[in-house]
Amino acid sequence: MQKLKIKRGRITLRGYIDKSNQKIENVVILLHGFGADCGRTKGSLINDCAKFLNYNGLLVIRVDFYGCGKSDGIFKDMSLSTQLEDVSAMINMVNSYYPNAKVILLGFSEGGLIASLASSTLQIDKLILLAPAISMLTEIRRGILLGTSFDIKHIPNVIDISKINQTVGKKFIIECINCNEQQISSFYGPVLYCQSLCDEYVPQEVALKYQNLYFNRIKIRKYDTSNHVFAGYNRKEMLQDIVDFIRK
Image (cartoon, rainbow, N blue to C red; front, side):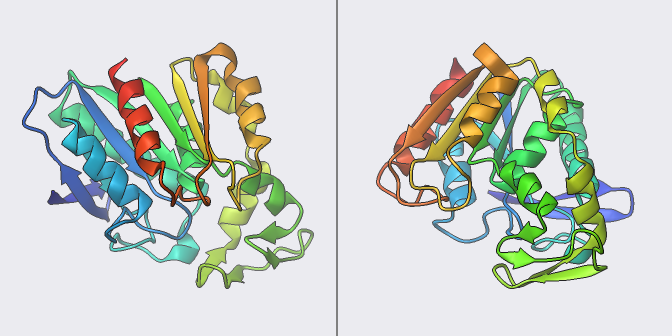
């Protein structure tokens, strides 16, 4: 594991690259959840993903989104559009250094939503969604974000989200309200969807929503792990499913 910096204009995104000694046929880009980071804590889902995939010979790239972790910016200036720009910068970096490699985009929670949106416009080969928080869009349209209520008709400039101890900006809220989920269906590559049956954040019916968007292009796997972050005995089973999907 080596530290990684990716430039996006004047912005620097910071994270890690886990290189492989094997021939680079696939590069996996990991996208973290809302208000989190690129797996800087041992035992976190993103950290475990990176280590397991790399152990299985895959090159893995992961950075903190703009306004998160150690990347430039502040969280209240983060939006769907800045996150999509971050993904584009990561893919451009991969294409520059590994032009013959296939690009696999893996997103967890809100990172799964971003991965879904990015795959509709950017060139990737496979998509992996871990409990993608597309349901966040529906909640925001009702005036709720992670349990914090706000006036949808008079959106404040900033909203304090106590659950993650962060302040969200108005731009993020407006972009979520105006986001067209149907554009997701324009990705025609293979998709793997993974979710815990005990997920406390993302409703189980989200899987059906993705099924209706991707039809026979999606493989859905459910696990009886303990929560949203797959913190249970079959996290490793899920990680092995990811490796098998990439190699298929």
